[in-house]
Image (cartoon, rainbow, N blue to C red; front, side, top):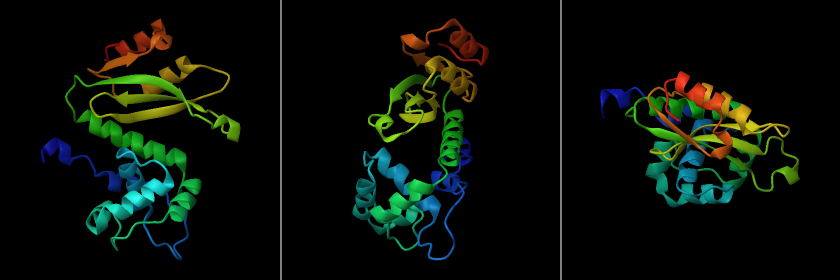
Length: 196
């Protein structure tokens, strides 16, 4: 492992920064291990709670221990559901965004990423707010670096300026769709050292 890459904490260590809302009594798994399982399973295409639980069971005790499960056993669907229903989502997103930025800083300067907005299918009918998300995705990593909800009464342009200000743009190429090709956004990208 190179000196540069050794300065990045493993994802499971970064996820330990997310505050654990659960009482210590009866806690079977660490929150960091549960979050790490969810990230790894999602990266492998297992995105529902049932699929995540299945993924954890299918890959055995050695992988479970590497993810942070001391016993080598992973949580059930019910445990995943109760954890993700109550976890501090803002803290989780902040930890993941910070970790992704640290990874990005270690990569060659010519890395590119794109800004793209998507509406969460079916979420508005369930009463969710900010169902439209603007995401910054690394081309090379295939990793979402940051995402932000777009308020219902606005559009992606304002959110784009906020997302860009939180990213490392020095020497990076930023791509976006036609909606975001605005003078003020291009000026912000260039001012922060990027290319659009």
